[in-house]
Length: 312
Image 1 (cartoon, rainbow, N blue to C red):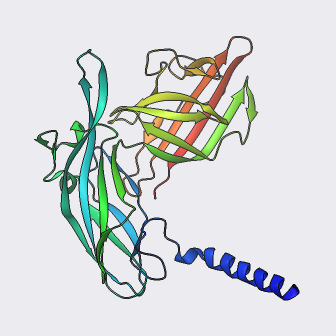
Image 2: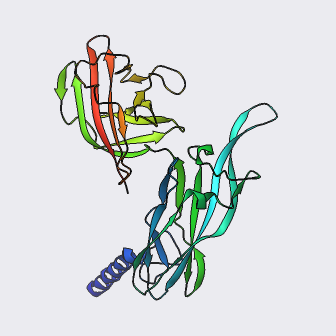
Image 3: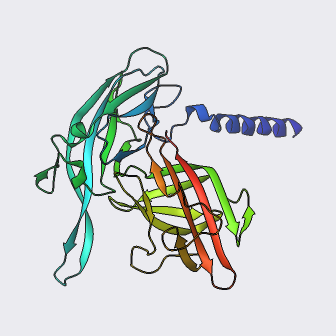
C-alpha cells in the first residue's frame, strides 16, 4: 500500500511538472510555440498615429525559432472607421465601417536559425494607399480622419510547415500629438495654502477626445476626477475648459474647477504654466498644468503638475 502511495505521488508530480512548463505554452498561436518555433511575439500591439506626424512609425516582433523555422512574415492592412446611420424611426446609431484588405502591405524577411528581433516601419502615405472604405478611397489628408479610426496590421508567418496567421496583430490608431501616458516629474498640491508633498500618482493618462480636445484622467491622488483642455498648435498654450463635453460645469471633488484664467491662484504658479512643450527628437513631450477647485466653506485646493510623455 505504501508503495502504491509513493507511485501515485510520483505520477501526480510528473503531471504537475509537465503542465507547468510555460516555455512550451503559446496563447497567441496554437500552431507555434517557444520551443518548436513558428511563434511571433509582437512587441507593438498598439501604436498611436499622431495627426500631423506622417511618420515613419516602427514596430518590433520577436521571432522564436525551433524545429519549425520562420523564413518571412507577411503583413496585411485593413482600415476601420465608423459612421452615423439613421433608421426608419429616426434613431441614430454608429456602425463600424471596414475597408478592403491589402494582403501584401509589407514583407519582412527573417534570417538565421536563432531567436531574433525584427523591425519594420510604415508611413501615413503607405497606410492610406490602395484602401477603400464606404465606397471611397481613403483620404490622403490625415486631418480628415476621426480620432479612434485605426489600421489593423495582421501578421502571417511563413514557416517550413507553410503559412498561417499569428494571433497577435498591431493596431495603429488615429490620435493627436499629446495623447498618451505621462510620468509625473513634479506634482504639487496646496490645501488652503498648506503644501502637501508626494500627493500624486506616478503616471497620468491623457486621452484624445477629438482633433483639439484632450481629457486629463485623475487629479493628484483622486483617480475619479477628470477635466478637459485644449492645446494651441502654434504657441503650445494649454486652455483648461470649465465645462464638460455635455456643457455642464466641470467639478473636481464635487466643487467648481478653478484655472489661471478664472481665478487668482494663491499658491500654485500660473507664470510658466499651462503650456505644452514638444520634443521632436525623442517624442517625450511635456505638459505643465495649474488647476484646482474652490470649496465655498474653506477656500481653494490648487495643483501644479509637470508631466513627461512615456515613449515606448
